[in-house]
Amino acid sequence: MKVFIAGGRGRVGSPLADNLEAKGIEVVSGGLEDGIDVISGKGLAEALVGVNTVVNVLNTPRFDAEGAISFFEGAINNLTTEGERAGVRHHIVLSIVGVGEGDASDIGYYLGKVAQEKAVRSASIPATIIRATQFQSYIPVLIDQHTV
Image (tube, rainbow, N blue to C red):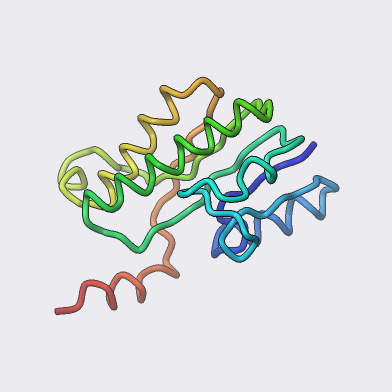
């Protein structure tokens, strides 16, 4: 089995890659550090050759609705387009518990995650959406970004 992790060197992707590799699974880390830009598509086709499963744990610093939606939809669209060509059989996406519900539906970043979920559900590659609660390690980041 060969897994491509979009965001494979980040806070979630790096330990996931380590865990999969420890189980004998071949991992391709996909991020800017690896010469792969999921948003522009640069290097993506080559990275997906022979990949069975894409795990998308990408993140964006954009918290405005337009920026977050553009980022998350663009990533899904490129991963799907190139994934189809490469024969990817499954797409796993990390999302957040409660997106699109109640007051959370007004937060730009969450609107991006809702758009991401809709895009992956309507894509041709079978997908699994994993909704996690907010990671505590992001609290200082959120405070810094939203302090007036």
